[in-house]
Length: 115
Length: 146
Image (cartoon, rainbow over all chains, first blue to last red; front, side):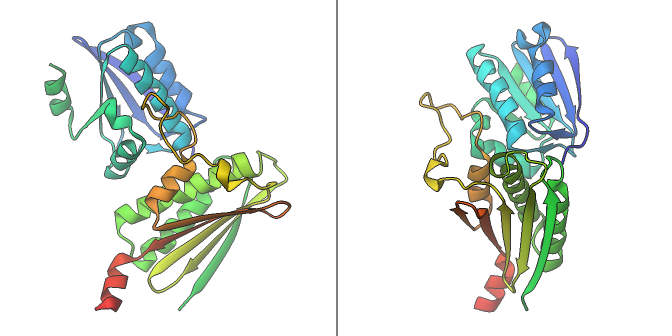
């Protein structure tokens, strides 16, 4: 697919928000991992990934998300995600990502569970 | 009535979009639900990426062929590459490391298997690889059964 990816980071209290729009693939997934790898993000205890409604993820992109989930588990971080379409929620379940990244229908529910 | 559509895409990551869009358009026209169209799009995408990356090994002189056959109750898709052939036994069957955590790579075939109704893989030295998948039009099958 290879639409441009846009990733931005925001901070509120003790939660880091990573906003992602576009395609997450083997080519672009490094941008998401790069955002996570920043010291003030990767050392945070709570991270919420906010996926745009047009987000497309293929197996190459999943590899980067698995890397993040793996590191998050080692660091005992709370990782959550909102905005994924039903299809990609199903994919997250299939590959086992939901064991490390909790999925929510909306941001309010995710933040409530962070507390 | 059976209909056949063939297309060829260049062996470049990103070119799979043409195959995805064509497959999705045909599936919608046949009456597949939105979620099944999404399943098909991911399956076609993964098969094309595998063909480009593992089959044709990014060789720009190679091509990937896509054949779409519509039947009354199913869409059959074949993705063909010109690679040397892969031993089907070497395709990983498990998705977990020994620590129970998902493996990092190799989800293409796993996703295809889980998103379509039937998937077969055929490989012959010198003739390339074929990933064949069938996705059923469930409501039409039920209609005919009744």
